[in-house]
Structures are given as structure tokens and as C-alpha cells.
Image (cartoon, rainbow, N blue to C red; front, side, top):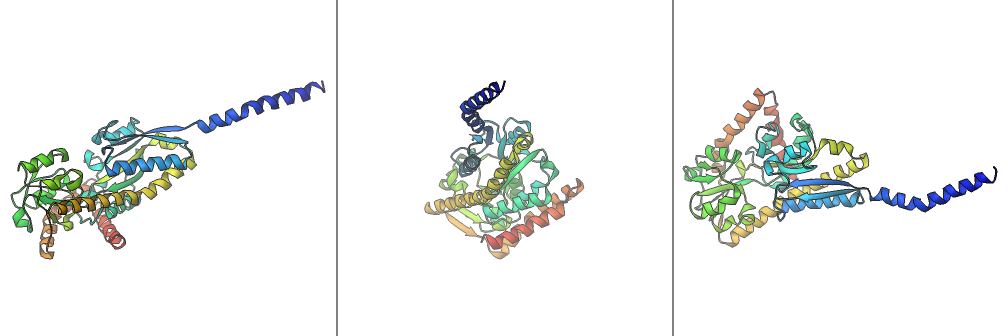
Length: 344
């Protein structure tokens, strides 16, 4: 009996020793595969920034997480990306809050024409605002981070220096920007970016309200003649990067920390991409001989006053629905001032 025990122990040790390496290898080989739906086309700077975020997650988790990118709305359309993440059609999603207007009533404050100077500021403001208010409307997902484009500006076929010159002009705009256009006395024409070039070329519209990056990204500088630097009424569009709640909860704590760390770092990266894109759009437009027209202080004040009812309307509606509308607007205004000192 004494001889059998040592032999049995040796046998067990031999078997475990022979198979242990493969067991360890199998454990290391296990990966969490995630899908990531991005509404931007794959060549867009923001899609590339999203992909670099995903690759950094993979790198820092030593391959324990694999993220498969579906850009251009190929997995879920832009207006269905949020619900897609909630329902698990995709594990992660990037799109605009504004594409499901009314769904995110508190976050809508970010898109108001409050005078955003650039994309980095808009992006920082959006993230700080979310962290402070932590809206219930986003409880159904894990919000990884938010980013937002530089100021929407006026691009026209003929120079516009005053609000009086803008009166009656047909301006391509959508959603909130349509309200801005209407408040300034022009006629809003709903139209996606894809149809704007031809509409400008054929004179169907007299101009467009959009970030200046569209002048290069969508080649619209070829068919407009000037840009009015109306930063005082500059609006943005906030965009979410969210994850399915169940998938997030299933991740180990150390993996969750990697997601949080990388997401925090990528806030400024997205903001910088927006600013770089705006700079390229501006340079491209000028290279074609187009003009950049700054508003005078007096004129800027007129434009701000004209759009103020949009802000008042938001406060009234939000308050009626039990939301801190006034506090939300004040917070965004304060954050714009704060970050304008940092990102000059």
C-alpha cells in the first residue's frame, strides 16, 4: 500500500505537468469579443479615433478583449445606434444624441447655440456636464465618453456680414440648427450633408449651417464663396460612446478599469481631431479663394440676442418636465468659460 501511494502521486503530477501548459494557454487564449457600431464612414477622422481607442483597449488588456468595428452604420443606422447598444445588437455604439431628439432631454442642452469656440472645448464641456448631472435618461447603458464637434458656422454663396443680409436666404440646416437659422431671419431647408453639395451648386439653397470641417470633408468649399465666423451663436452636436449594460457588468473589474482609463484619455484625442478637421476645412476653403468674414462686436450681439429665445424655450420645456433646465444652461455656459481659458 505504501508503494502504491507514491506511484499514484507521481502519476498525477506527471499528468498535470504534461497538460498544465495547454490549460494555461487555453485560459490566456480566452477573449471577450465585442462589436462596435460607428455611424461615421471608416475614412472619417472620428471613426479612426474610435478605432484607435478600440486597439488601445486590446493592447492594454493583452488581447483579453477584441473589438470588431462596424463603421458607416453597417451594423446599426445612426438613429438606431443607441437602441442597438441597449438591446445588444451591438456591444458598443457611437452616434449623436440629436438623432433621437426628445430621448435625451437634459443632454440636449449641450447642442444649444451657446457660443462654442472649438471642438476640444465642446468635448470637455459635454463630458464634465454628464459627470455632474449623470442624467437618468442614460441609465440604460454604460457611458464611456462623449465628444462634440466645433462650432456650427454659416457658409454661403455670397458674403454675409450682417443679420439683415441673411434675411430670407434659404439655408440648409437640420434639427436645432434649423431653429437657429429661423431665429436669424433666414429660411431653413432640411437636408442631409450628402445632398448639400449639389443643392449649393445648383442654387437650391443659398448656404449651409455646419462645422467648417465640412468644407473639406464634404468638398463644400468648392461651391460656397464665404464663411461667416458667427462664433457667438456657435452650436455643437454632442456624440455618445456607450456600451451595453450587461456586457459592461460582465467584465472583470480590472478590464473595466482599462476601459475607463483609455476612455478618459480619448476625450481630448477626439476633441483634437475635431479641431484638426476644422483647421483643414478652413485652410482648404481659403486655398480656393473663399473669404472668412468675422462679425463685428455689435453684429455678434445682435445674432446672440436673436437666438436667445431658443435657449429660453429649452429652459421652459425642461423645467416643465421636472428637469433643471436653468441650472443646466448655466453650467454649460460656465464650463465654456472655464475651458476657453485652457484651450485658447
